[in-house]
Every structure is written in structure tokens, then in C-alpha cells.
Amino acid sequence: MANPPFSKGDDGFGYRREVLKGSTKFLADNAVVFLNISYQYGHKRIEDLYKNNVNFKYEGVIATTDWIPFDLKNEHLLNCLKTYVIEEEKGGFKYTFFVKDSNSKYLTAQKTFEYFNDTGKNPLTKWQTHMFKFKKR
Image 1 (cartoon, rainbow, N blue to C red):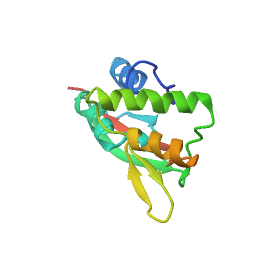
Image 2: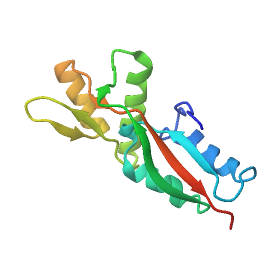
Image 3: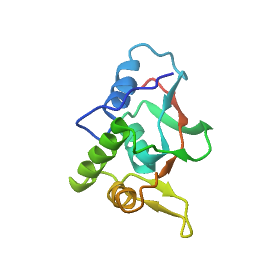
């Protein structure tokens, strides 16, 4: 079970990639790795994580919270969002936040940043635990 911190200077998945890559030396066949990955990282980034670690099969979300605020008044989280915007601008996978208002919708990091600046309202995310099953090759 790992809850890696945000890895500054990349798409936020640097430590998650290292956990999967490094764990292969220690795991028995059919072992599982649980990673905490919040919703805003998006499905494409999670898919890329296991497709680039061929020893793992993605088993899905095994635990999740309901929608909770991604508190952008918290400087650390605001800096994360700014890093996400830069990653999208470089052509990386899009991030996904949810905003609940009269026109509930999913927003990219860039649109989320604009939404927060315009309204002062926080987007929503979910904290989730994902399961990856290990297969020796």
C-alpha cells in the first residue's frame, strides 16, 4: 500500500511509477499493490501507469470517497494545480476536476484554474485507492 506524495516537476505520478517499477523485485506472483491516486489525475494517466509496467494488471478502484473540495486556498494544492496546467500545456494527459453548480461539469486543469480565479469556488475530487495485480514474466 502506498500513498506517494506529489512529485514536483512532473505530472504528479513520478513516485507512483517508481513504486510499481521498484516493487517488482520483491513481489510474489499474484501479489497486489494498492496505490492512492486521486480522481483529478484522470483515467489516461492511470492507464499509462500500468501499460508501461507490463508486469501489472489494473484491477480498478477498490475504495473511494465521495466528492470533496480540492481546496485551492491551500497554497500546496494551488501549486499542484499550477503544475497540472503546465503539464497540460506541454501536451501531457489532461487532468479532470468536477465542479458542481447549475451546469455541473468536468474541467481540465486549465479550465479549473480559470474557474477558481473567476468564482473563488473550489473544484471537487475524490481520494481513491486503486489495485494493481503483479504477474511475474
